[in-house]
Image 1: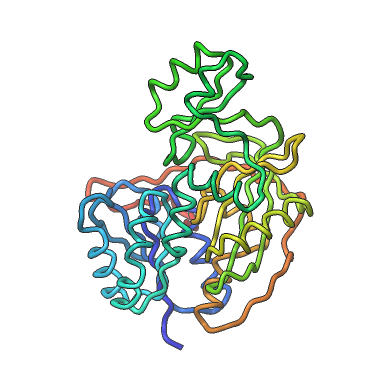
Image 2: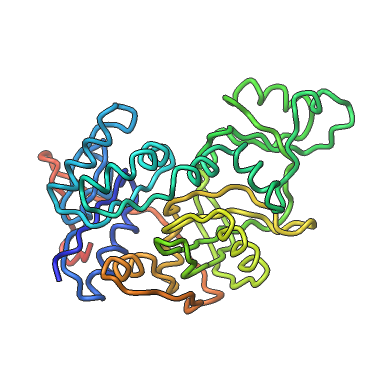
Length: 332
């Protein structure tokens, strides 16, 4: 069989994900390379890939062409987006990219991405399909004196918990609304927060689903997490996936509150904490390689339960020529 080469876009700090793809290929006996792309030569993940290329910024007007050229250069089989801001652009050009490169672009259909990337669209979709979400307030409703605090403010097209705030009174709300571009205001949810890693094949059939309790976060990304095979969450998210019909690795966030399971957002891409679920046994990278080999996959829960993951920082040193220098004995 010919090589299976994977291109990871906007690689940034996704060192764990790069390693997961390389490990999956090795364990499956698959030959091929993991190529990383980013607009910055100081993106750490570049130096853990087999090869890397610098590409224009997503908003440059030349990003799609660069992805196509890079995919042709390396005979890429799978293109993996990793950040929210590239999803709409890539989804809108999915057919063109796949037709010109012969690669599979791991992004859901445009209408699915539009639901996920705009928090108002997410809210409407959830309400229309009978899923619980915190109440969304109109400007008129916020002017009334009977508003109950705390509330939660976030931008309509936000990402990584940037510009999100819990507000405890009207004075705080008025101040925060001047800071957040295109804000939406909801009830604040009290309860344990979960991230659910879902992997679906290219026909939107669910293969794995892993709920993770968010024990601690940093800059919107999980820092400590525990795998929890919560049947209630699995059943509800299964229904959500059947309604939404995404593909690939999807990250769903919710809280278990007194009202039940209330949803926060859906990210139609690998989340930063995805390697936790992969290491627990729900290996999305292996599943992607298997699909590319033409294998048929079935739903399974063959992953470890009640294991805890602690994430931490590490460093890589580049010399004056921007060449990485590893410590002797390192297996990085």
